[in-house]
Length: 393
Ligand code: SF4
Image 1 (cartoon, protein in one colour):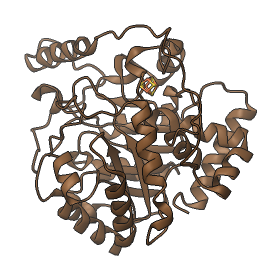
Image 2: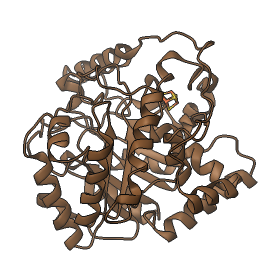
Image 3: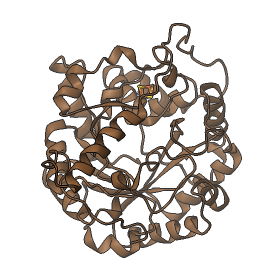
Image 4: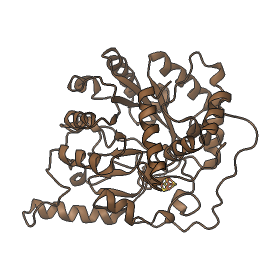
């Protein structure tokens, strides 16, 4: 079982409690991005294309933990940017574990061997190493040779040191089902504890706009991969709910749950979701209460048309598994169906056109940063300090 039993029980109990309390919207996973700076520049990444002044900002330990407390989600995923570039990441992780929350640190692993001694293995803590495919596919995806080998070596080291370690893979339209299946075999052989997989989201700021998947191709690709599971040398363990995987294979009609994975970055609480940044709330409460949720999601908004990303749909799948456990049980018993008709898709006829609002919050933040640097104003609440660029640290 890829999701540890104690985690499944604790998260299941949390979801059940929200249902019993009649809460319509509640968070499941806090996506915490304490920085945008990275030591790679992947073609499909929509997170790192900011001016240096923004990339040099960090959320402090106190701000990170305040976000954890404000949000209350049982799981915290720390992403970025490359989180290991944050010099106080160990303190952030310690603080989250002390709150009895599950914490997953996403990393490209380039700094993992150097920094792993700052962390302790714990049932609350996992590394999630970014690997988009085999050596050739991953190095191409991250636009740098040799990264796959370094990541695999780092995975071996942290596993030897006793850390729970999963991989996260983002798939684009260049992914080949047979090669992905063999890649999943390889990572299971290496000894990872689970695989987290998702189609890429077409970030408007990503340098490569050519290779994002549309919904039909996503479903065909995942059917092609899952159909090869029977021939695998070792059982693939996914760190995701079976209903989300079933959705990727085209067997479920789900609407996204953008508030399920609320996202806190330097700019604030991102609206409406981890993938789209169309405004920022000052507090989690403001995000939940003042976002026009009905304006987003597949069928409502053009930018959501092709989205099938885990940060939007995993929370939907988990809520479905809790409210209709027989559906999850059926997938668990019979496996993911890879042939036959697909579930109907949400019609796109009434979706509103895309709005391009990306630069507004960047410009506002830059004005604030420059004003602080000039000593012309007090630091805004979210900006605690400036640090030098640490790329390649
Ligand atoms: S479909 Fe949902 S999760 Fe995906 S980009 Fe739109 S609002 Fe975000």
